[in-house]
Image: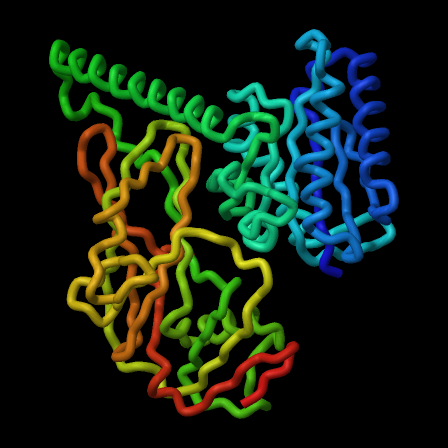
Length: 425
């Protein structure tokens, strides 16, 4: 069922003594019992925190108020006047999605997501640097459904969007720190970021002088290492389509009836994802240094005639992850990635009006929507960036180093659309 999923965790819990940990747990779980009284929630105790599942009868708006207003207020009262060593700092993650129950508890991808949000390194680092009593991170779904509409006086300006990269999860989320002035904590983080950037530049300058003073041969220099990973794959969370090279009857539909599994099978059998099905480009810093992204282009490796077979179209999957939406015209002589809200051919590159930095331990996510009317195109992403004062470029392929494939569907002879697990032509 669609439920509100919340994870609460105590920061630096293991650093305290056993009596301190017992006192923290006593306060946390008794407080959660009090604020959640009458909600019908289930609570899964997890040592220094809890996974809380709130049933659909309780609105997401009320749940947000409980965990972003009531809980931080009680925490502030509890911490007031205590020595720093005895104070508590909490991290709270909120999401809404489908939750399954079994004899051992709650399970599902949306349960996994809230755990990944709470465990996000960027969020944890921000909470620690701000010395915040409470940090809150909400999914894009919660931000769009609740925060953006200002329900219960919630102020969207108090939230800041961040990239989340944690295990298998690559997404965007929104963070806030109740009790701290939004302008103040943002300035503090920006000052620290600028100071770190200055240190990086200074170290690079000193290193450059050292290289001038002590010449080395090319053989002595370490090979250049790209300071981030880059991954591109089709995004099957929105409205994907795939086109099979052959005309198929309902009895010929291959493999699983589950829509996105079937589309992937179609591509493995020589088909291609259809024009408009986005590709997610995910960049993750390796902790080496910050780089400036200068542009994204596309290189078409091969152009063939559009497929004349069968189109399979999926419906929207609730909870598609937000990112930076872009578009590219594969039919253009030099395909350039642009803002998706603008004309494909008439607007400048997305990066023409944006300075995009990839910090050393953060991630950036772009959803590129490839458009074609004339071909079945094999293509790769060309990413240009500045690192250590030098312009560089890399190419990003799809899975297993293969080129991405996108086909026009205008020549296809048949079309099926999935409704509730059933394909209808």
